Image (cartoon, rainbow, N blue to C red):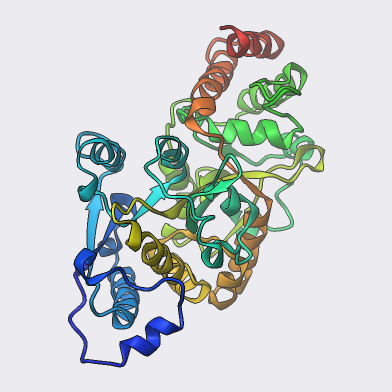
Length: 404
């Protein structure tokens, strides 16, 4: 089922409806056109029949309030020639009228597009900018240099999954786990090294010095590398860990019972229907409870000034908790407001995901994650593959990160 423009409804007293959402009145007749929406291909609702129906019905409900503003939806690839980022930057410079009114962006696109002036700040629309209780990481999603540039929609949180049969048995402290018989898997070859960064942060590490510059604490990184090296030597950390670039191999090994626990993204956890699995932040060294998150937000790039407000109004309508609750479950991602978990059928799973969402902080931007991920990934690789001592690998990582 494809998302199509909703059919024209029967005439209704639309003037009364418009009066309830002031100051966001429709644009002047001479400037009216359809509201154009761009969605990233990974969040294409047509991939799931229920998600497609929910999205279609939600657009229809909004269209009934504004029958003179038909809605067009377009699916765009994230990257590459003709991809979303390239298309937005190119159109902004050469053909502004080709820009969409509303676009669903990953966090990694938000800062560069905001700095290029492609995105409209939400702060100007004070009625819509009021935070409806977003999780802290969701607030971070939409903020660039203290300015809101959109409305959070869906999230994804890194978690440690393990089977329900091990509840109360699997140690959730590093030292206890290292002495146990249980195994662990994660994607250490992930270009961003998100799990390695999470383990470092959970151990009490920081990635910024007092001046806000990128850094790694050599002592804490040494400890993390020593623990992972020991786990590998004891057969608790499979060798494929240093080859896995994403969490698909991790989830496959979890489902086949080849490992006892594994770090995966919440979307992978949900899409694999791991109802019989528990989800926690990780082996919480030093009692530090933190995990990492990514997400998507609605932003406006409307080339018609009078349609920016109505675009954000649609974004807010699509981001109400009741809709996000059903849509997130259908498409396999996490809602960005606690209220949305209230209607999830699997209450225990919803409670765990809610807890994780409250602990999460946003993955640093690519400008930081590219160098940080490279040194973390290399540090673990040389410790496991080349048997370089952890202190030396940590020292080399810190040096590589700070060298110009």
